[in-house]
Length: 248
Length: 68
Image 1: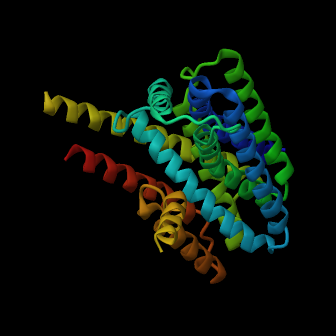
Image 2: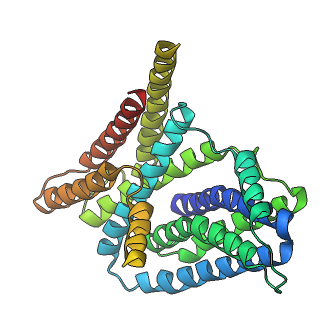
């Protein structure tokens, strides 16, 4: 039950964060150059991602569970630590926060400058939307496949991701603006904590580790990762303030 | 050849990301835990200790590099 809740939450949050970023790109080209090609590009990219998950997800079911958990655990750990690292650096001021409004304006300017054609499909718009959704979605597809297959439940991970995609796209279509008020960094931080926790748990299980308390160890690992990450944010913030004070 | 290099670079950036130490450290940690467990050691504690150390080292490195 705990596993399932984490599985859905992690894929929902990861997909929501990446969809917010993809939505900014699609909105910018859609508003500037027309919606038809932007929507076709978005749907095409979502189809490619769907095929990727549909093919790779079931294929991983044939891999022995211990080997799969070591492989998946390593990947989740690497992804999770990278997400956490970025989120900690952003929260402490060492890295700029993701500014959806600035990205929107930049994409809008580029879309206005690009040449236009009378073809049925505006290839510039199609390509930008397709690339944006595909690249942002690829990491989510990996998380869905790896998280889902280690738990032998890719379907549940897909449900979480699709729910996030529907929510973000619906809100985006209604407001017609980039979703700059979404607490992206907090969500990235949460996803990083979850991926790191499950990465440790599964690579440990696959390696033959016997966790104290069995599955309940996940809660302990989660608390450790969360506590250490918050402490690192605080230390990095102090370092950043010190660096700023030295400069002024 | 150019496309092959770009393809390789894309996957390197995608999997390894901004700090290669994390990827190398994770693989080394899991290998050590695997070996220790298969030699009869109760090495569950090694995983969280090593992973949190890796994260700390990566953050310290990034903040130090930016302060310079």
